[in-house]
Image (cartoon, rainbow, N blue to C red):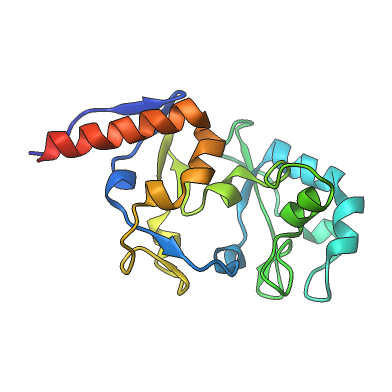
Length: 189
């Protein structure tokens, strides 16, 4: 019998798919090749850091800030209600350098800030995403990747992405997620 319970943490529904999906990755920034959607406020913050980011960019990136983002679009899964996609340059996200590193994260770390302080939440969460008000697996995107996958992994996505989930949900939210996973498997067995 299928579990019909609804799990919610911090007002966000939890898709049981995250309890059953395995995931592993030898990260080389491959998921960044397609760009990412940022919240409108994250987009503004990144633009405000342009003078810090431009010196970190290499020849595979553009320093023309007018080429960094797409036009905003309405999307209720973002806190501001607007999403702004990063543009692609050299067949990858404009913020991804030739070594597969995000210059936004690199900048934060070099300046002694927490590594994800300025990075868009969807970058941090991948392969998780928020869709229609639920934390779920970005399985469509995951299927395109060669270095990150769910078919050859022995690790649960919740375990592989623990640091990211703690960042997003907080310690208490992550503990609640683990409790929900136990409850989910007990109820379906």
